[in-house]
Length: 184
Image 1 (tube, rainbow, N blue to C red):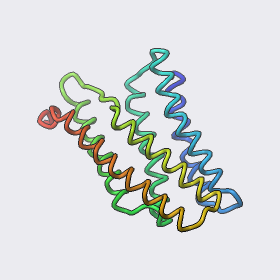
Image 2: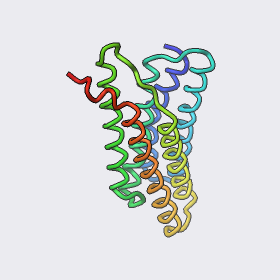
Image 3: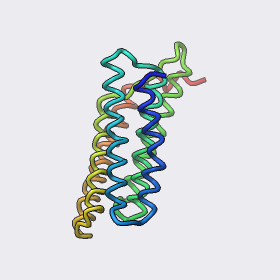
């Protein structure tokens, strides 16, 4: 297993650490959770950069990298919904988009020639916006910003994430529509 794929696995392993830091209240736990989330998010950039730079792009990486991102960001957004800092509709849009994209990926992999579809630019923009928004919100929680400002910033960012998620999902489905009729 190459280094970029190991970084993807590290991102997956950091998810339960992030979860524990969000759940276990102690002084600064949101800042620690934000730091772990930020490190995990940085591995997303780093694994892709290294894979392309060193010519180590693999089918495993094309599959596992976006999956790790989905698990990481969806986990954080579920906590934000639980805290009342993200509307459940935004979470539903995100989950629906991820199921739809994963479904198309599975159909494409099972189609003649078995194509693995990597993330496109809209998907990357969506992921970066999700990650940056989550980092900002947990930083505000950790710095104990006023509840009103946390709520306003959080909901504004998460509705923007929801909009970009819809756009990226529609673009992805449109760009890969040729696979809709290949299912057996």
